[in-house]
Image 1 (tube, rainbow, N blue to C red):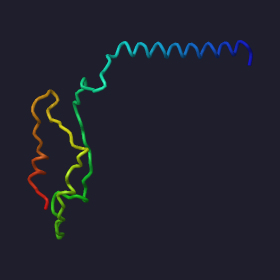
Image 2: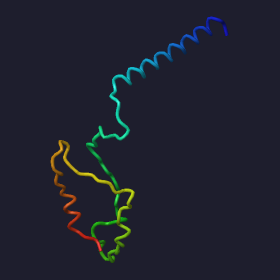
Image 3: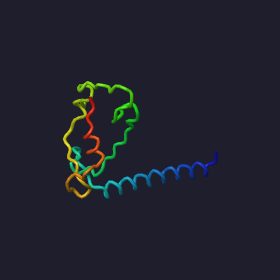
Image 4: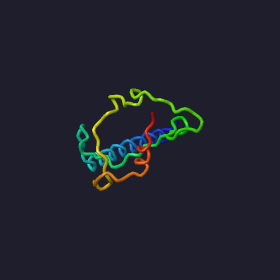
Length: 109
């Protein structure tokens, strides 16, 4: 490798490192520092998608006995429990859910 090729390669690497350092410095200056506790953030929207399918039907299957579920099996584990409140996107009361009302009207055994 010739002397000029080595000098060009070294110059390119130095330029790249300087540019990366400059960009990181600008990002640190423009972004406000956030504390470790994260109280500056507020969760605005959570979407949970799950499949219940025929494995856990919400209506009785014709000509089949309804399965009896142990209530202890349906309880949420302690490590998944946390305080939360459901509001609309502007902080108002929880919006009504027709699906939730319909699901709650049918109680499984």
